[in-house]
Amino acid sequence: MARIELRHPKNEDGDWFVDTRCIDCGTCRDVAPHLFGAVAGQSVVRRQPDPASAAETTDAWLAAQACPTTSIGTLSRRRRPGRLSPFEIEPGSGVFDCGYCSEDSFGASAWFVRRPGADGNLLIDSPRFTAAVADPMAEMGGIAHILLTHRDDVADAARYAERFGARVWVHEDDRRAAPFATDVLRGTAETEIAPGLVALPVPGHTRGSVVYLLDDRYLFTGDSLAWSHERADLTAFRGACWYSWPVQADSLERLATSGRRFAWVLPGHGARTHGDPTELHDRLVGLVARMRRAA
Image (cartoon, rainbow, N blue to C red):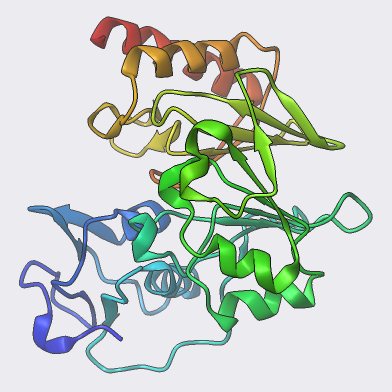
């Protein structure tokens, strides 16, 4: 629960606030950039939700439920609405933002995919383990595969794997972070995990980073690729590149030239985005060029 006595002084006046336990993971700013902003290394409420807007109120609650330090709340201690997370990103997609981010993964987003009649449901990276997430997953058929994008965002994956008897996929170069993994990816060649689901290794952010492409539409990118609200473009995180920036540029160029297309970018850190696949491809090519110039 957010702590009123620790309310950040830079919050806009009003009911909603962020407290100073914030770790600056940026998740609230990615979920609701119209409501939250950054001040001196922490998030604050930069604009109070319009009380007449149900959508803005929901966005504020989604950010609050995602916050890994439970630092977002209201002075009035209003009761949360019913279950909001996991939250389907577009109607009928079967792709859900899990919310309930883990401090162990520095607030990284995790994603759940319901695939009835396919090879089973998916969890990409891991939220913190809580019945508020695990029970809805069980109601939707459990988890068949846990897909880890890299070592940083493993969080409580082992607990989800144990509860649901899931297979766990990780690249061999990041396996130390997930010794419980059942399936190991190797090299840089793409691997078909199930019909319509491929793993594409993209070393750079970490040596064992992987992106997963579902149905040539949803690209789950971990910390290798994201949308930037500030740039209004695709971005990569040079300041948080733990293995090699030039290698990451090579990896993203390989993705751009693979012939694969996607309409969604769904990262662990950074903003998610939805757009025309050709435009997103062109933006990826442009990003690689910028990365090369900055190398």
